Length: 267
Image (cartoon, rainbow, N blue to C red):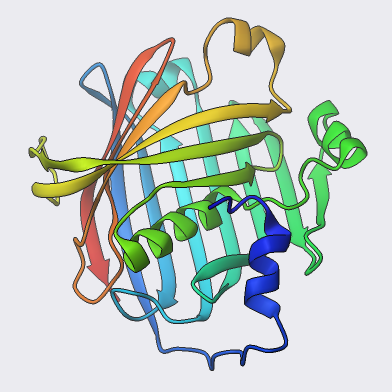
């Protein structure tokens, strides 16, 4: 199933022959992850997800906020802070984003981008300051018919909740770069606890291969700095909530980075 082909699932979600479900009761969950590189903590990720209740979510609105910051000695090499917010709605079990906003600071250089989603699949881009990548994306239109990164995670969780299989192709635009995520279902594996793991036990393995489409810097591509592969372990870590990634491992030229879930709270 190609989630990046927005007209397909837009037709499913908006088809006049289907009644639009009433908004479901929402549940808000706060998640905290720690990122490890070569065994050392290098970043913190805190996210709040508000989505329809149920292990298999009903149609309704969702909202995600996330805050990412580099930590420890790694922050001395690369000082990075990003705040992200996404909103949208689940329609027939698939996400339809309405907005995605990113505010980030690399060293002392701030950057803000706003994405607004039309029902015809178009994506309006506002960047401050403008970049060559955002100008190229607007010129070539390759942001259209895509999901933002947070909505892509919603898509994965919703799909897995519905059929216990993550196999899909998801087209993503993060405000600068356009890429496809090819997901394949692996087997059930044991997630062993790290230093502060929230979850340990059996989880479903989902393998991800990115296909880079546009907006990537050639020197970074040549150096292999972008993720080359990733593995997610999905598990029902929160009662009456869809399975979530309890651990994520990505690989690039630096080596393997592991994001481990260390806290999950229901509000």
